[in-house]
Length: 139
Image (cartoon, rainbow, N blue to C red):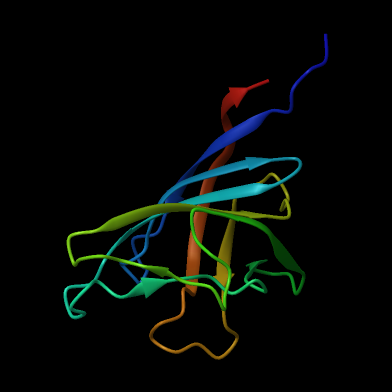
């Protein structure tokens, strides 16, 4: 019987994040990828809730390293220039981003959509990942 890869549910401290929408819901880490699940609520300021998308060159950077871990897959959110249009300000969306795997250890990461971001970009800084190998989901 083939052994499946261990995947770890990671404790995330994102309390210092300025961006509150989208919200990081969960982080899963394995030897092949890091998966970050987000929740997004359509903003009230747009008649129909606006739109969302993610740049295909979005990446993760671990503090203390210059290496960029590339986006491998976007689930339930289109890659730019495509975009998802909300129908109302009461809509919401859950989406996931899968990146190249990072070292399986406690660390601080940044999620970078744009190197020089605007207010509309999904950049997240100083995300503390703790107890990385504590909770195995499958193995």
